[in-house]
Each structure stands twice: as structure tokens, then as C-alpha cells.
Length: 285
Ligand code: PXG
Image (cartoon, rainbow, N blue to C red; front, top):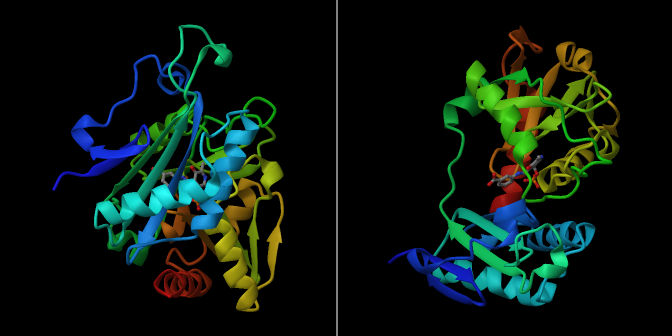
């Protein structure tokens, strides 16, 4: 059976799932999105993702034409209609079709799109040996220009950095903020472990407050590992004992090199492994 996509209030086969070429989501990147995992047919951290979607929409003054409860229901129906067990849900809300010109008042009918499909993951080998990163020359958007806390349809900033990574042969790239501090990667948050303390940049560093990030900080606290949200610079990564990334797709993945320099032992460290194990328990509970 063909993938069923939720669009314009109903489920249709993916070949028939369409929006207007006048949609401001397409014309201007005017909209918001979420990426969510399902494990065993259950939507993982559902409330957290739905809440973040509504917060992103509020931040760009986009009124979603359904309640969070209706959205939750629509997501569950889409997952069920596709018989999805372990997969991925992409929720998109656009400003809707309008006339040419930026003015959102000239749009009508924000579009809610829900896609539930399989997910492409990093190969297991990368979890076993750890990732290499490069630092992108493209910095993270200044939060006074477009706040990285909004998961908007404007991902060019991250895409340009990702291309730099691809050119250098890495699957992710580190992005600094306008102050030269470590912000995050193009689709993942970053953590280091130093002298038994887990450290990650605070939201003010210009990051998306990842839902996996927050879950992992909670797991670390439960495990008795001190957690600090502090500004970090590249030096902190170079001298870290361990480094890892978190994200919906990646879960928890070790980083063993930055710009060709070895981090820690050059192998996935014990804290990283412990947190990945704890996270995986959480997804299977
Ligand atoms: N930073 C950025 C810039 C992201 O886009 C994360 C961190 C990690 O956040 P979560 O909440 O996932 O722990 C993200 C997440 C996709 C896709 O389809 C992108 C993300 C998540 C899921 C799917 O490209 N980005």
C-alpha cells in the first residue's frame, strides 16, 4: 500500500498529497516543522514535540488551524494508517497559499501536513567507532535575526553548513555562533564530558533546544552525572574527555574528532555509551 499522507484535513496516497505553488511555505520558507520518532508504533515524546511545534508557530505568529489535541490525534491516525512501527513523523505547518509578496495577511488557510515514513539512520558502524566533525565557516543564525529556537522552514543556514561537512567528508558539521562560541551541529545538539561533568551550550548560545538533548540531560541527572549548560568554545571540545551529539534521528552518537584533531581517546567513551544505553531503554519502555 502506498504511503498515506495527511494533508488538507485528510489522509491521501502520497502521489495525491499536494500543496499550492503559491504556498508561502514554499515561496518564503514561511512555516514551521517537527521531526518525531515512533518506536513500536508509539509516538516518542509526543507532547514535547507537539508543544514545540505550537511554540515555533507562536514565535512566527502563525496560527495553527487545529488544537494541540486534534494535532496529536491526527499524528496518531497517520502513524496507524501507515502501519508504522519504528519510523519517522514529519509535521509541517505552512502559512498557506497567498499572493506573491511577503505579507502573510495575503495568505489563507495554513496547511498542516503529516508524513509518516521510514527513517534513514547513521550506520551502526558510526556508533561503534564515533564520528568526525569539521567546524563550518557558516555561523549559526544570529538569534536576533531568526531565532534558532524556532524550528522554522528556513533551514538554509544549517544546509550550507551541512554542505561544508559533506565537502570535507563528514556527516555532520559543528556550527559556532556570532560570538565564536560552540552552538550546535546542523541537525543535532552537542555535548562534552570533562572530569565527569556533562556540559552543553545553553539555549542563549543560539541553539534549537533539542528534545533529545533535554531527555539526555534528564537521564544524566538520574545517573548522578552533574550537568551544566555553559558557553563552550572549540578549545573545550579539543580538551574534552568525550564528545557526543543528540538528535531525534541520531539518538546519542559519539564524536571522536574535530577538524582532524582527536578528541579524548579517539574512541566512544564510557559516559557516551552509558547515556546511549539509557536512552535506548527509554525508547523501548
Ligand atoms: N539542532 C537542530 C538545528 C535541529 O534541527 C536538533 C538540534 C536536535 O533536536 P531534537 O529535538 O531532534 O532532539 C535538530 C533536530 C530532519 C530532522 O528531517 C531534523 C531534526 C530532527 C528530526 C528530523 O531533517 N532536527
